[in-house]
Structures are given as structure tokens and as C-alpha cells.
Image 1: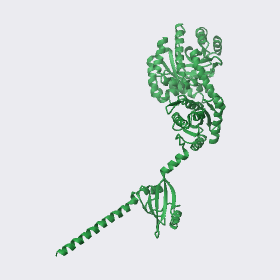
Image 2: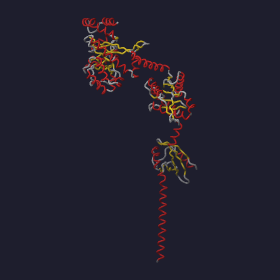
Image 3: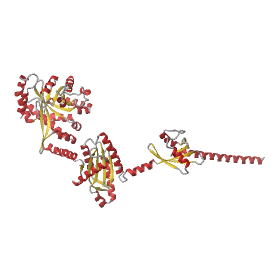
Image 4: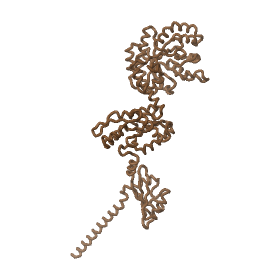
Amino acid sequence: MPDSLENLKAANEVLKNELAERIGLQARTDAIARLSEENPDPVMRVSTQGAVLYANFAAIGLLTYLEIDIGDRLPEGWGALIDEAGLSKTAIDKEMQCGDNFYILTLQSVVDADYINIYGRDITKTKETEHQIVNFDDLTGLPNRALFQDRLEQVLVLARRTGKLAAVHLIDLDHFKDINETMGHHTGDVLLQGIAERLRECVRTSDTVARLGGDEFGIIQVDPADADGVAVLAQKLLNCFANPFDVDGRKIHTNASIGITVFPDDAESPEQALRNADLALYHGKGEGRGTYRFFVSKMHEDIQRRRSIEDDMREGLHRGEFVLHYQPKLNITTNRITGMEALVRWNHPQQGFMSPAEFIPVAERSKLIVPLGEWVLHEACSRNKAWTDAGLGPIKVAVNISAVQLQETDLQELVQGVLEDTGLDPSQLELEITESLAMNNAEASIELFKDLFDLGVSISIDDFGTGYSSLAYLRSFPVQRIKIDKAFVDDIGTDENSGVIARAVTTLGHSFGMEITAEGVETEDQLSFLRSLGCDEIQGYFFSRPLPGQELEAFLKNYEETWALKLSQERRGSIIDRRYVTNAQTITN
């Protein structure tokens, strides 16, 4: 009996060991089976006919990209690879992109089996490294010449298609070789890295900054507004060299020269664009370095002309070279002068009187329009106050306000200060703001107009009819006057549809209780038509050209004596007698 018990215990121990061994074996088998599922790289089994028999979790993305599922056949083109893998004793590799990821897929045949195994390896990081090496400068991290030219080709194609400008700025450091030779290449390398960082900060994200080699950098400027926009960036790039660079605790000063070309007009290929910019750079270095030059000589001349005007304007403001001329405005119902527009003129010491069309845009771009506009406002109010005190009024003076003034100044505070300083009655000041400017931010314009209205100042909308969007807001504007743009006055008498806009503007303005002034009136026919519409006021060469202050004063003094009586007695219907216009010209000469 004891022997039987011992035998039973021994048999039980054998069974326990065998069970434990089987459990361990199953666990190892399960772990091996899970290997493919736990593999972060794709694993698939495909029949020799191309059907997907198995795919691990990592391979599902590939199947989704191929737009198939387990059990489906691989797309056309895989068949030849599967056949080759089935016949070959060596593995076959295929590179494949799946979205943003790249894989090497290895097709491996199985002996005496009707399927092959496919093992994937993610090479995305390797690809990114290769891309970085091939397309980016390893010192600065900027795009290299190859990538720069590739992007330049894309921008050039876009510029041709859209007609928009693009520009290439070629930047070459001045005397960089001396830094390498005297301070060592390590210092030169650190300096280049610092320069690269500053150049990045100068441009928009849509632009490209590249290191083209050595101490040469290139910038692709996409869609600048105009040639001045190109020049502004060039100057900004030069300014980034104004402060010294800190290299290992040492302050290093350096500067650069820039050559610029604009395309598509000046270049048909990336190579030509770079040649043009290089030629402009060469000329710039020959003229003294530390500056920029355009390949297109006329464009460069125009920009230099604007820069010269800007510099002269700064001096002219201090030297008192600016004067005001005044164009009288006639109420065509009463035949009385009820207003005048103040127009700034520049008596340049070398060039004489310069056209406002030339210097006003420069003043606005440089923001010199702010001090110039303040002077105009103060001078116009001061002179009008003097004329009023002399018994030549009251007459309202109109002063134009620019967009830059609205952005850069507190207009209400400025106007209030000028009125207090000059003593002019607010009712004798009218501010002219263009329709497009008023509509640029209509809600803000309404609030500003209300503030100015509270001061007692009049507001007129200039160039009305050119903005095409005012009707919805016009009722809300505290505006006393609308000025019909000269273009619509010129239209009067040209055909059967002439004067349509002038008629519509007059009707609309009167319905809102506003007065209507037509500007640019030059003929009797225009005056007659405007009178028939009920237009309130005209200004233009038919009545008087803009006059210097002294001539206007003489005009005002003689107007009542020589015009008022004759106009009331000899109007010949509703039209001003041309003889009296001649008389007015005689008076003012």
C-alpha cells in the first residue's frame, strides 16, 4: 500500500511538470505569435496570387493608403514583384510612400508555400535627414542654393501666371574674407550664423532666405506691393547690419551689399534672375558698398527720385517751403462764395513748384504727411481767421485728411487744439475725407465723425461715387456735404447716359439732408446741367483756379463789388456769363 501511494505521488509530480512545461511552451508560442502584432513596422502575408492573407496593426495604414482590406488583392503593379519574389531565393526590396511616411518593404518567399511574407521598415527619419543634407545648409540651417533655385522656379511660374511681382535680393557681405583671415574660420562661421538669424527676422514666412555659399545669401520676396515695397525690404536688410554681432564675447561690425532683380518682367528663369541680381550687386559694390542696387535702371532711378524727394521734404518742412493755395467754391443758387479748399503746394528751391501728385504719395509712404497735414490744418485755419477778422467772411475752409493722419494722430484732439490756438469758429472749418477712407472702417469713421461734429466742425465726403459701398452707411454718417468726383463731372455731356451718377449722387445726398458740391467744373454745359439737378455748390477752373493766399484775398475783396451785382442782373437765365469768368481771371492776375 505504501508503495502504491509513492507511485501515485510520483506520477502526479510527472503530470504537474508536464503541465507546467506545456503551459510555458504555450506562453512562448503565444508570445511568438504576438511578435508580428507588436512589431511597430508593417508585416503582411500575401498569397502568390496577390491576395492579402494577413496584416499586422502597423500594416493597416498601408492597406488604407492602397484602398484595400485583408482578403483583397494588391493593386496592379504588385503582381510582377510577387512573382519575382516567389521565384527568387533572395529578398526583393520596394520603397513606398504612405502619406508623410516612407517605408522599405522587403518581399521574402517561403519554401514550399503558396504565399510570401512582406516586412516593412520605416525610413521616414532617414528620408528627412537626406532631405536636410541635400537641401539645407548645415552651418546656418537655411535652404541651400539647390532648394533656393527650386523655390525660385515655383515662384517664377506663379508670377507669370498671376502677373504679381516677386523679387530676388542677392546679399554679399563686404570684406568677409578679412574676418576669416584675421579672426579665424570659427569666428567667421559663428558670424554667418548670427547673420542668418537676423535675415530670417527681416522677412515674412512666405519669403525664402537661403545661404547660397560662402558669405552670399539670397532672399525670394513674394508678392511685394510695388517697387517701393522691394526697396523697403532691401533697406530693412541693410539695417540689420547696423548693430554689431556678438561672437564669443567679441563685438564684430560688418555690412553688406545687395543686388535686386524683379520678375517676371526682368527674368524668365531662376538662372537669369540670379545673374541679373548678381550684376546689380556688382555695380553696387563698385559704387561704394553697403547699399542696394536694382538691375532695372529705371526702377532704381524712380526709387532714388522718391528718396531724394523724401529727404528734401524733411528739410523743406523746416525751411518753410510749403505754401497753401485756395480754390474758391461758388454756391450756384445765390452766386456767393461760400467756401474754399486749401491745397498744399511745394515751392522746391531747385525745381520750383512741384506737382502734389509727385510729393503727396511720398509724404504718405514716409509718414511725413503727419507733420505736413498738421501744418496745413493750422495754416488754413489761421489764414481764414485773419480773413474773417478783415471782413472777408465768414467763409468755410476745407482741409483734406489722409489715411495716414487718421492712423497716426488723434484727429479730434488735433482739430480741437488748432481751433483753440487760431481762434477760428468751428463752423468755418470743413474736413474732407475720401469715400474709400471713410469706408475702410465704417464703424470707426462714424464714431470719429460724431466726435468732430460735436466740436462744430463740418465733414464732407470727397470723391463720392468711387467707393461703390457707401450707401449702407451714408445715412449713419454725420456728414454735411458730398463732393461729386471730377470723373463724373467730366462725364456730363459725353453721351445720352452722361451725368447719370451725378444725378444719382445729388438725389441721394439731398434725400439725406446733405449739400452737394461738384468738383472739376470746367464748362458752361456742365454748370447748366448741375444747376438743373439742384446741385448746391461748384468748384473748378470754370469759376477759379486755386489761388495763392494774397491773390485769393484780392479775389474776395473784389468779388462783391465786381461780380455780385452783375451776376444778379445779367445771369442770362441760369448760366454764369463767360465775361465775368474772364473778369475774375483778370482780377486775380
